[in-house]
Length: 444
Image 1 (cartoon, rainbow, N blue to C red):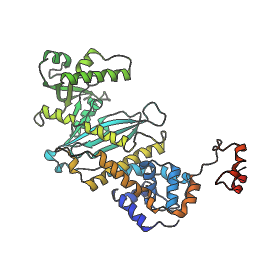
Image 2 (image 1 turned 180 degrees about the horizontal axis):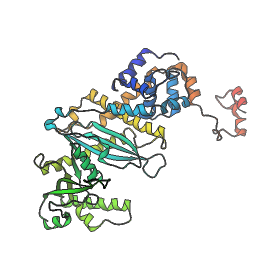
Image 3 (image 1 turned 90 degrees about the vertical axis):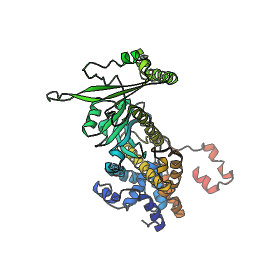
Image 4 (image 1 turned 120 degrees about the vertical axis):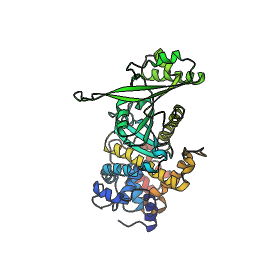
């Protein structure tokens, strides 16, 4: 294989500076790169991953791109080398996530929002994979990224937290076992309360009749209750088979306009999931914002906790960026090794873009600790245009390799042939402008 120009190597190596320094050693450790044939370096192997996962080229297009940069290679060769990258790409993704020391945080607290999102394979009607994601609510950096299959539901157990972390989550993650587990790790939780999956009890052990209380206090705008939830152990032989999760429930009465809109959404969601209309109790509670937290009121007031929960919307925007700008929801293939690598490789590409974005534009202007002057959406779109030529190496494509590239891109022999003109028409081709007699006769 003829070595590419040194300038090309420098351009691509500049992009790889955003990866962990040990990315080459990891490739050998996880046996993604065990021999050098037509793919001679770890960098070239990584280019395959970024072309297929980041830029969404097909294997044949990836082979054509590599052919224009150097030696001819087939799409089957590319696929085989790509499939060996599964553990390596996951290891790189984990290494790319930032780690922040709690000593550097104000008051030792780090606020992170967590959520999940479903991903479907081509032609599927249900969920095939789930994305579990976490972001820092101050810097908006990704803190957690995990891909699981459809059998793994949303849970706080997927996220590793420690002393001083505060998880801000929606009602889908408001499960007593998951919250209790994070509390044992030293973390706290602020969760949108879901009364159907986590019953609450008062200090005297009686069930909390939230609808009755809110009806009696019809003039109250904001209320707070000291409550507890019961966590059952899977092993009933343990002495602590019934654990107690203590916390506080904060309830905010929505305005008449907000409550009406919330009830409309409630009816629409109920019609999508089942034909049964929502119950009167569900519609009544839709007019309130209810938040459960394990944080003490001495640490943060109820007003601040409610405002902090509203900032959880930033994770919805982050998921939308991944799906709209990077096409994370456009799964390239059905379930399998290739699909798994594509999903993790897409997230790796997203982290590389984010790291480069903060280097090029700075990042303090996008923090939530003060009034922001912009969002990450448009800068990310611009940076993508800069990064793509660095991955393809288009400025270093060799004009002498176009014929070899075309051969790589040709269709393989298959039962259904490519379309061709009728025989009677092809006999007239010798008289068609631009078609030589020799070419037309050979086709007939």
